[in-house]
Amino acid sequence: MEIMTNPAKTIRIGTMIQATAGRAAERIAQLAPLGFESFEPFFWQTTNGQDLAELGKRCRDAIGDRDIVIQAIGMFGNPLEDTPLDRETLQGWKDCIDNAHHFGATVVAGFTGRLRNRPIPESLPRYREVWSELARRAADRGVRIAFENCAMDGNWQSGDWNIAHTPDAWEMMFNETPDEHLGLEWEPCHQLVYLIDPLPQIRQWASRIFHVHGKDATVRWDVIRRHGIFGREPFVHMRTPGFGDSNWTAIISELRLHGYVGCIDIEGWHDPVYRGDLEMTGQMHALRYLKTCRGGEFVPEDGAYEGGDPSLPR
Image (cartoon, rainbow, N blue to C red):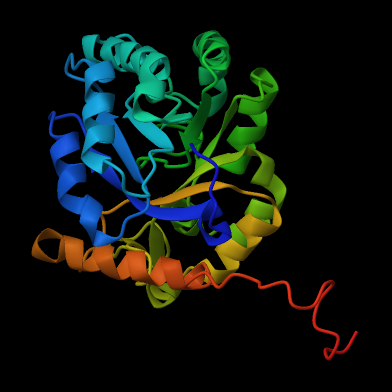
């Protein structure tokens, strides 16, 4: 990712682009004029045999000379298991790592995988085997790996996709693979789903946050008080930023305080209201909202008073 000359854009606001079906470049060309500052092309379980070097070139050509970057590409699936599609996911990780530079990306993101329907600790030996090798591969290519903190309806005891959805698991994972090239693709949504306060988590884990997803959640406390979290009524809804509970001004400030430089790419398609025909209405609202939470339009300091305005109290 290029060095930014606009200090406000050390944190850029963009969106995710579905790449599995082969039309990522065309979608980028469609959205590029709308004000997005970054894109994250991503694959679900398989790249479908696409030539990623050629796809990366087409994505960058679609951006053209606009001030837009691709910091991360995504590969989401379960690379720890051994069905044919799982093996495609593992190969997809290798291909994404090898070809990230064709997109201009420095991060490849996705799920860790897990041994299906087994407690998280039982996945750790296989996790160490797969991700130690992929971490070395990434380091050799100047790429960092970021695990999304999504449970995919799993929990500590069971699940199909991912072990990297709880801080307890992060501690175990990074003890198994203490490689500086392994970190998190973080977002507050999944923390709220677990009823975790996102802000202290940023302070603790900032050095491991390599990429951020723009997704939020609304916790329905009235439902929790009446039905609990295991009843028939959903106690939380995933939301597009600007419609959920998170204080994104505080989140972005906290990320800045801890030196985060990168992108917040909006993850759509989950909001129960702004979806379908309203999907891009919601995403454009999120784009404007997150830019405001970032501080709004950049105003350069003219340097009139070295060391600050002398009229201000000390």
